Image (spheres, one colour):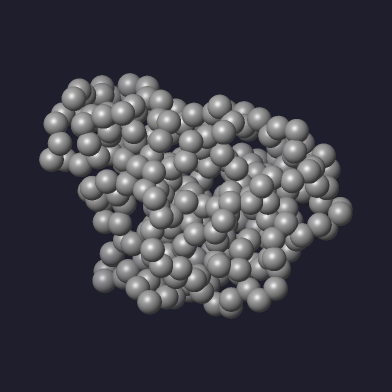
Length: 265
């Protein structure tokens, strides 16, 4: 989640780091094999786990790469800040390929995310849009063969719900921004809250809907009503996997405690 101030309300749920977990063998939902620790989950609110980590998204190991386009004309700069040299201009609707997102100057409060088109070529991410979702990303040989499970692709910012290997629904989400990356790994849904107020040292967010936690540190799938809908499909949270409320409701109706969740690049 991000800090946004509207009518004096600070909106943030800060999420910290977890070690990346290696993908295991194919797991059916029926086996109920635990993918993450399921005891001692904090009640009530997300955890504030402190410092940002290195401020550049890791490289994809799958060969996939983020693709989108400029929403309007946009300056490309030599560094991820507005003080640096303008190297060229993207035209409206011009296609872009983004191998990395990096942290730079905040042009929108608590959103310092820039797209690195290539070394020395940066554009502020809010000026871009993700391509619409077509087919779900390839799931690879480690995917479960049966049962309900959820796949989150961090490179493409795509969330897909599966029945076995058949995609049921797929849509753009928003995962952790550089420095607050959503931890890759194999998990299960461990706690669900239909509507909650997330409160912490420097955030207070009411009416967060359809929250499904998958770590004891507070990482969750949830609805996000404060992010502009056209900005989904790019990293923007502090570690959670956020989405439109109606999409979060679909996952709420699809999943239950114990539903497997795979997060990968």
